[in-house]
Length: 224
Length: 407
Image 1 (tube, rainbow over the protein chains, first blue to last red):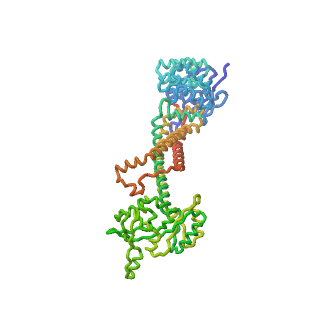
Image 2: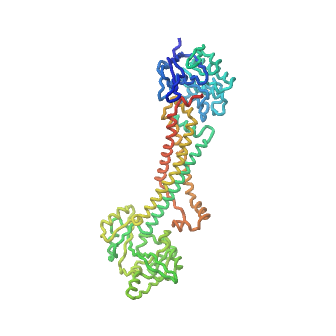
Image 3: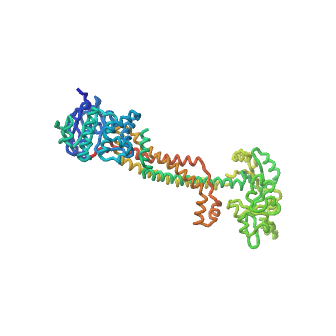
């Protein structure tokens, strides 16, 4: 049996709509994801999917409940970095001043690790895998949306994460490109046995994961 | 040092020689530093020229007496043998009435000993025509005084001493001394050049009825001797009626004004740098707002708050360093061609002798002081860093989750 990577137990989140009023965004949410497993969370806009994803990564506070990643409790604290978790966002968030290769290497540099030949080889491998090898030394502004998202995916894999939290990674791409990027993402995750939690509006993508949930009226309902 | 590298990439993105913000910030700092360098160096130049001129005109040390010094020769001997004193020359000074035709003036008269004066005051270097050795035969006039009286070498002047007034009180008439003009001199110090008459010690002693008495002595110190220390020692040995003054003490007010002018110029021009640094601050602030998501990502990857702050402080440090360097280079470059620039400007706007008439200089003097460069450079750097702290703090305390939300 695969090792359990992340567990969330009875997570509840309130939002303050004014100084006196609070409303419950979601409550009593239980999640478990094991090594190599994939999970999708669907739901309408404003249902709290992204907030839940950020909470699972320790970027957002919860009002009650506990989250454990690799048997360690996750608290929201001053340093939002959790080793072993990577993110992919809808809007790529690439550093425009850096080349594609440098965008892949920057997380390594920030973590204080040495960028040696081995790290550079790994970056080139990822670029090759994502079909971006020829763009290595180009600036992100010269790339299309799909290519940029592929760079963002490559960047997420640079640190060999155990879990990727993807917040609508194909949200700003056209249908065809979305499909291609999603397939690429799924296959790379499978290849490197990386777990992921995907927040998406696209039910077709969600259906391809091991666990498919819908977040409706503050409750997480399992669909698959 | 990823912060250093990323800061450089922000300022000089790949494939570009810098962003608009980068160059406008550098130009702002460079202009401020350049203006400060130019003004301070010219001020130093004026200071140095004025100091040299004051020493040339007054001597390094002047001993003034509250009464007439009768035993001049004995004092000369005593002072010459004083430790640290190189040369001594006596002088007599006062006002007289001079007349040439219809022209009358009241010049400041200086009687010097033509045998010893050159050892203390470089009078020969001021001479336009004539020879100082001829002082025993007549008088020297400054160029300005000669022009006012409309006289030249070879003409004669009638000189009335204050003794004439005493004679009038006694219903007597004291005839003026008729002295030939044997030379013209110019010190390039407007105050002296406008209205000074130079004559031999004996001539002025005679005019003032001093017999062998003098009003004081000018001294030069031996090389390596501290003028202030020598002056203190002299005052400790001299009787109360005699007091030694350094050239700095004699013109203390004037020198204080020079210092004050320099300090005020520095203070006023520092605002140029302040404005440039505020523009860096505002540019960095807009960069922080534009890059909130990148900052959030850096935080997720493990960047500490201080590293995020450092990322923006580095940018200010780079901008100010390049600006300071270019400012110094620009300042020195402009100063190198200052006289061409001044000639063009004064030729266009002012009369030819404008600078000489108002500032006693025909060329702008310049002196570079490393202390000024260090002060301007370090102050600019510090102000730029301080200006960067506000955007740096905003960046380091930005809210990661809010920045990354796409909805």
